[in-house]
Length: 455
Image 1 (cartoon, rainbow, N blue to C red):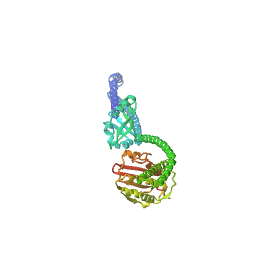
Image 2: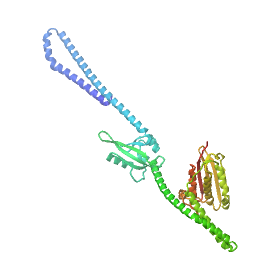
Image 3: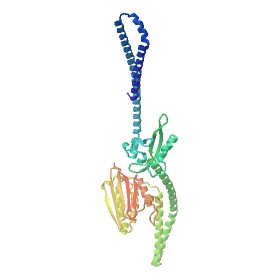
């Protein structure tokens, strides 16, 4: 029994006893004397019998009064007990509803749900909030958001301003830069709603927080893909135009080469050695132009790979033997570390893959004009084969690495910038991937991954 009900029982019990005393007093002093005078006329000479009758009457009055009092108090206690049972049932239902609501709020892991009181102190910190901010509920409850996950030095809407707008408008949503326990920042969507009593007095604020990192990354990726698609369309149009131009000049170049060779044969013995070198220069220039047109034509032509079981290690060895003269001229030492488990676990188009590796390794050799070391190794796991080509050359900047696979982009003084895009195209035709890491004056490392195809 609570204090309020106890005070009520005591009050009504005292009131009942007081009423009993008043009734008995009124009976004894106002109603009994006339009746007593009449009874004396009936019991003349029998004083003993009259006295016993008076005592009996008073005893009966007392018993009746006490009985009435007990009945009143009993009825009052039953009424109070019934009201108290209703209150207990209501409190039980309220506690059950509160527990259920807390369970629902705490089970949400996609959203961080935070409840603050009117002093902006956290009173609820659900499982989603623990996962998002890396604080436990015990660490967060009782503290203010600005002490946990709000940047103090950020310009813009804070939790306090958001709460003020929510109180004024009935709800407010905005984007705020927040931070986790490890001080890493992220942008989140915060929807804040005021919590009020039935009499509209403010109890606190309900905050629903959603991490926008993945959404922003998706938007950034989409923008990058759109920009890359637009760029590729421009490059494709440029490639088609270049291929058309190369095709148009290919036949005239072949004619020029024949004329130059014929001129050289006629001039032998008739011209001085220095003048013959001019003819040789014409022949070399025509050959260079012919090679350039073939590169453009090959790049513009779609790569149609015919995949069959092949040995990646053998292809690597063949390419290094083919490029041995270039390595000797540049004083480049090669080092091989080939995993025998790589043999015949991939489906390869040997011709196109050999051409791609020639471009990649030749670029590495040319990046070491004053000598260096070329390291090529292969290894595998249960799903992938890894080919790594590392050089100790001049390296590239981050901007150069980001553009290295763009057609017609080159870091060389002479070149079309088609070797790396061609290599990437070939690797992707093999359902593999290629990426590059490099630092200026520290060298470059090319990573190639190919899928394992075991029967």
